[in-house]
Amino acid sequence: MTAGSVDTLQRVGSLWWYGRILRRHSRSIFMLSFGLAVAGAVLSLLRPREYTALAKFRALAPTAGAQGALGALGAQLGISALSQSGDNPEFYIDLLRSRGMLRDLGSRIYHISGPPPFTGDLYTFFEIPPDRTSARNIKLVETLQKKIKTSIERTTGIVTVEVNTTEPKLSEQISVTLLGLLNQYDINRRRDRAHAEREFVELRVGDERAALTSEEDALTGFYTRNRQLMAGRSVGSAELNAEESRLQRRVQFRQALYLSLAQDLSKIELEEARNTPTLLVLERPEGFVEPRPRGTLRLAVLLFMLGLIVGAGVAVVREYLAMVRAGELQVFEPGGEPSAGPRRRPRQSGRAEQPNVARSAD
Image 1 (cartoon, helix red, strand yellow):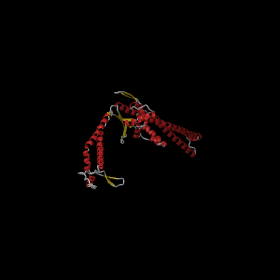
Image 2 (cartoon, rainbow, N blue to C red):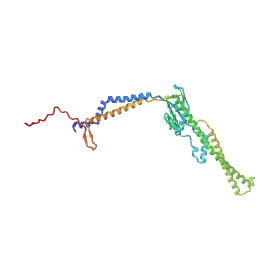
Image 3 (cartoon, rainbow, N blue to C red):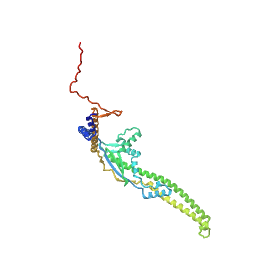
């Protein structure tokens, strides 16, 4: 290896070497970065602008009467599910992105004055082909999951819903419809739960009524057999007095349990018939639809930086390969022994001397 090759090897990888390459190819690197930035900005500007309709809500806790009835009933029967507090906000996040909710949302009819005017469901608006029913529903759900963004404030339990479409009126209508579907679903769910609980409590009330009647009949039979005690006379044995007290306590216990279940049944029936809103809407989307930022400048800056990195990497690799081909660097054979790369044959300053050929005399 010559002294020039050693010097070249020492220079490869140094800051001076990289700086020389970047300075030599600076024009190409800049043009690549600028071209990527311009292309990204043009594509971003050509993309249809989306409009955001924002809504915020919070789930209302059940009423004190119904909650107290269900809690007392759960404590009596040992069922913890009846004594739960209001729904967790994560439940509404999952519900908003569920397939059933989004399918019902897409099946509603929406009206846009235009231009151009539109009347139809979301299958038509998003141009989902009339293929198989399952494929259409899956495509609709996937599209709406991209258009609807949800978030939650952990400290307050407030759920935020953002709907993004290319039509401001459609974004507003989808957001309003979604709140209505969510509220109606929550009402139906609570009414169905109260209906199932009412049927269960009715069975319990019937059993307790029968048990109370049985205990009252036992006490009546005792008084019938012991008329002296019933007349208030003082004669009688201690055993009869103890038996009377025991039967009275059993009647009082059954009567208290029966009355408690009857009161709970009345409250649960009221909860089943309740159709008041279960969501506290803090921000409604009507009149507050705003354009969604395209992020053109951010995209252009990111693509420009990416172009600088890619262009610099390509320039370094090309320079390195050019030096290898020129024989200025050593390459390693598979066996591990270094071998000199291809070298140019040095030029000769003059003509090669022709050897004198001695000719033999005739």
